[in-house]
Length: 120
Image 1 (cartoon, rainbow, N blue to C red):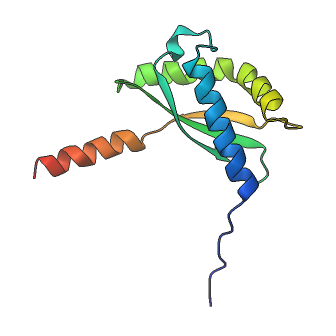
Image 2 (cartoon, rainbow, N blue to C red):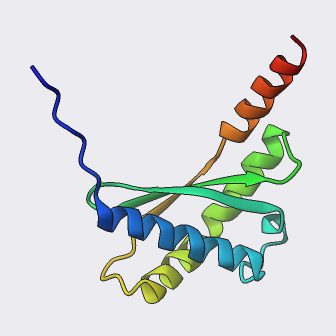
């Protein structure tokens, strides 16, 4: 029996890209006033199928300390209301998705794999 093909949701993909670009722009332009947020880079966004939740992945330039990463995540959580209001206005959404912030560990994993390959 064939597995059903997972359908892409073009609207969700467009909203993901728009959220990523908008939040990255806010960080780059310094619109988020918290000084802890100066070194973050938005690496990706995933939106749920119903568009109610957006998970925003970020990295902190040059930082591996889990305590610092937790502080960055906390700072983003405090700025979530402001970001959500801006997104609703900029993207002209009836309801802006709930924002969740996660540290993107794929870069760290890639660095570890690269290091292992160099040591072979």
